[in-house]
Length: 126
Image (cartoon, rainbow, N blue to C red; front, side, top):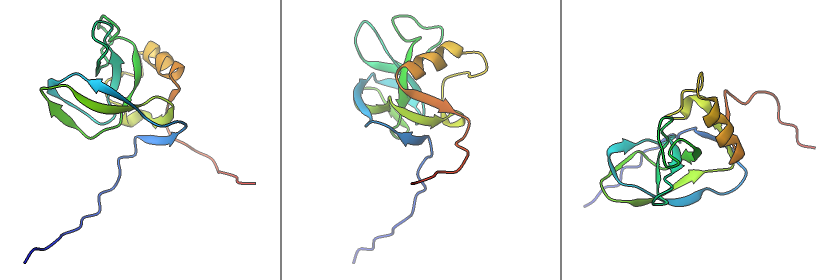
Protein backbone atom coordinates (compact mmCIF):
# COMPACT_ATOMS: atom_id res chain seq x y z
CA UNK A 1 0.00 0.00 0.00
CA UNK A 2 1.36 3.42 -0.89
CA UNK A 3 1.07 6.54 1.14
CA UNK A 4 1.05 10.17 0.03
CA UNK A 5 2.53 12.79 2.27
CA UNK A 6 1.60 16.37 1.49
CA UNK A 7 3.75 19.19 2.65
CA UNK A 8 2.96 22.88 2.43
CA UNK A 9 5.86 24.90 1.06
CA UNK A 10 5.84 28.65 1.51
CA UNK A 11 6.40 30.50 -1.77
CA UNK A 12 9.53 32.53 -2.16
CA UNK A 13 8.56 36.18 -1.96
CA UNK A 14 10.85 37.63 -4.61
CA UNK A 15 8.14 39.08 -6.81
CA UNK A 16 5.77 41.52 -5.16
CA UNK A 17 3.67 42.24 -8.24
CA UNK A 18 3.81 41.22 -11.90
CA UNK A 19 2.57 43.64 -14.54
CA UNK A 20 3.17 41.24 -17.40
CA UNK A 21 3.92 37.54 -17.66
CA UNK A 22 7.43 36.18 -17.19
CA UNK A 23 9.60 35.60 -20.26
CA UNK A 24 11.24 32.29 -21.16
CA UNK A 25 14.82 32.16 -22.40
CA UNK A 26 17.60 29.65 -22.93
CA UNK A 27 19.88 29.77 -19.92
CA UNK A 28 23.47 28.70 -20.45
CA UNK A 29 24.50 25.62 -18.51
CA UNK A 30 27.06 25.99 -15.75
CA UNK A 31 28.56 24.02 -12.90
CA UNK A 32 27.65 26.95 -10.62
CA UNK A 33 24.22 26.92 -9.02
CA UNK A 34 21.77 29.44 -10.49
CA UNK A 35 19.75 30.85 -7.61
CA UNK A 36 16.18 32.06 -7.47
CA UNK A 37 16.40 35.85 -7.64
CA UNK A 38 19.63 35.99 -9.68
CA UNK A 39 19.98 39.06 -11.91
CA UNK A 40 20.39 37.85 -15.50
CA UNK A 41 21.96 39.26 -18.68
CA UNK A 42 22.03 38.22 -22.35
CA UNK A 43 25.41 37.41 -23.87
CA UNK A 44 25.69 39.23 -27.19
CA UNK A 45 27.63 36.44 -28.92
CA UNK A 46 25.18 33.54 -28.35
CA UNK A 47 21.88 35.08 -27.17
CA UNK A 48 21.72 32.94 -24.02
CA UNK A 49 21.13 34.16 -20.49
CA UNK A 50 23.95 34.19 -17.97
CA UNK A 51 24.19 35.55 -14.44
CA UNK A 52 24.75 39.31 -14.46
CA UNK A 53 28.40 40.33 -14.04
CA UNK A 54 29.16 44.01 -13.40
CA UNK A 55 32.69 43.61 -14.77
CA UNK A 56 31.62 41.34 -17.63
CA UNK A 57 31.73 41.94 -21.37
CA UNK A 58 29.51 40.97 -24.34
CA UNK A 59 26.39 42.30 -22.61
CA UNK A 60 26.84 40.42 -19.34
CA UNK A 61 27.19 43.77 -17.57
CA UNK A 62 23.61 44.81 -18.47
CA UNK A 63 20.92 43.03 -16.44
CA UNK A 64 17.62 42.45 -18.23
CA UNK A 65 15.60 40.66 -15.56
CA UNK A 66 15.51 38.47 -12.49
CA UNK A 67 15.50 34.66 -12.60
CA UNK A 68 12.26 33.36 -11.06
CA UNK A 69 12.82 29.61 -11.32
CA UNK A 70 14.00 27.22 -8.63
CA UNK A 71 17.67 27.00 -7.69
CA UNK A 72 19.30 24.84 -10.35
CA UNK A 73 22.67 23.45 -11.38
CA UNK A 74 22.82 22.13 -14.94
CA UNK A 75 25.88 21.55 -17.08
CA UNK A 76 23.66 21.77 -20.19
CA UNK A 77 21.54 24.66 -21.43
CA UNK A 78 17.93 24.73 -20.20
CA UNK A 79 14.79 26.84 -20.54
CA UNK A 80 14.09 29.21 -17.68
CA UNK A 81 12.01 32.24 -16.86
CA UNK A 82 12.88 35.76 -15.85
CA UNK A 83 10.57 38.51 -14.78
CA UNK A 84 10.95 41.64 -16.85
CA UNK A 85 7.99 43.75 -15.77
CA UNK A 86 7.47 43.51 -12.04
CA UNK A 87 8.15 44.90 -8.61
CA UNK A 88 10.69 42.76 -6.74
CA UNK A 89 12.16 42.82 -3.24
CA UNK A 90 15.72 44.16 -3.07
CA UNK A 91 16.85 41.75 -0.35
CA UNK A 92 15.83 38.74 -2.50
CA UNK A 93 17.82 39.78 -5.59
CA UNK A 94 21.13 37.93 -6.09
CA UNK A 95 24.17 39.32 -7.89
CA UNK A 96 23.74 43.09 -7.59
CA UNK A 97 25.48 45.28 -5.05
CA UNK A 98 22.78 47.93 -4.64
CA UNK A 99 24.94 50.34 -2.63
CA UNK A 100 27.33 50.86 -5.57
CA UNK A 101 25.89 49.37 -8.78
CA UNK A 102 23.48 52.09 -9.84
CA UNK A 103 23.82 51.19 -13.53
CA UNK A 104 22.26 47.79 -12.83
CA UNK A 105 19.30 49.46 -11.11
CA UNK A 106 18.80 51.80 -14.07
CA UNK A 107 18.99 48.96 -16.60
CA UNK A 108 16.47 46.84 -14.68
CA UNK A 109 14.10 49.81 -14.53
CA UNK A 110 14.40 50.21 -18.32
CA UNK A 111 13.14 46.62 -18.60
CA UNK A 112 10.27 47.37 -16.21
CA UNK A 113 11.70 45.61 -13.17
CA UNK A 114 11.60 47.89 -10.16
CA UNK A 115 13.64 46.78 -7.15
CA UNK A 116 12.02 47.95 -3.92
CA UNK A 117 12.91 47.83 -0.24
CA UNK A 118 9.29 47.06 0.68
CA UNK A 119 5.73 47.87 -0.22
CA UNK A 120 4.20 50.07 2.37
CA UNK A 121 0.88 51.82 2.61
CA UNK A 122 -2.70 50.85 2.22
CA UNK A 123 -4.34 49.50 -0.89
CA UNK A 124 -7.60 51.26 -1.70
CA UNK A 125 -10.20 49.67 -3.94
CA UNK A 126 -12.89 52.07 -5.06
